[in-house]
Length: 134
Image 1: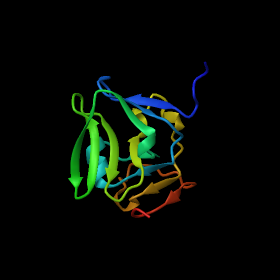
Image 2: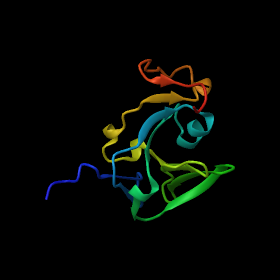
Image 3: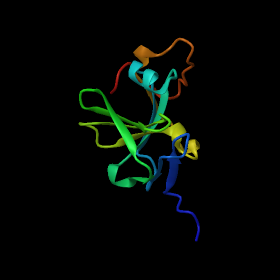
Image 4: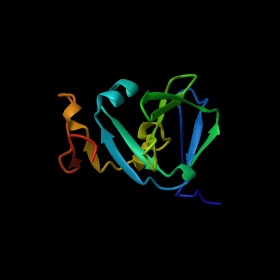
């Protein structure tokens, strides 16, 4: 049978943790906040969102760290790859786009927390721009 185009797989660098998205992303955006910069080790991170019922861990498990009140960042406990972001008030789970086997499914629509943007990051002006989270 043909591959289900609504299903996307991904995982960590070492392969210990694998996951499947059982739908297309609900959103995609670039976050420039200092928390994301430190958690990812880069100037920004591109996220894709998915409803919790459409996210499945197929191998291993995700370890979590509460990085601020009500916010949980998920990562591989073996290699440290950042995988997810969620909050008490969030309806979707954020998945690091680069951890997808096919990161090109991410189609960022916005840049958020531009008040934290590093000067060496170039911004696509065609995307929506926000100094904070809208």
